[in-house]
Length: 97
Image (tube, rainbow, N blue to C red):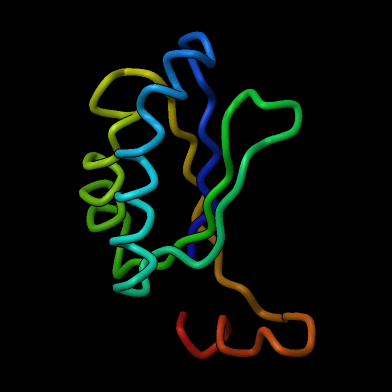
């Protein structure tokens, strides 16, 4: 399991222009089960993604397709972790790791 934090390195107006492609990228990887949760950071300086992948190389390949990354609009910090406990209703996160 991975937690990814994105930090915007361009003005938010540039991020907004890239947002339609970013949303399509999110939809594709939610559909295949790679992405589990995502959203904006507050204040709006980037985003956070919870993901699963076979390994870091597989995740890096997915992240490389993000329009934000392709445009050099955001940096990415990736932390891998092995969840050992969850809140009720999120037990599927344990089985998937």
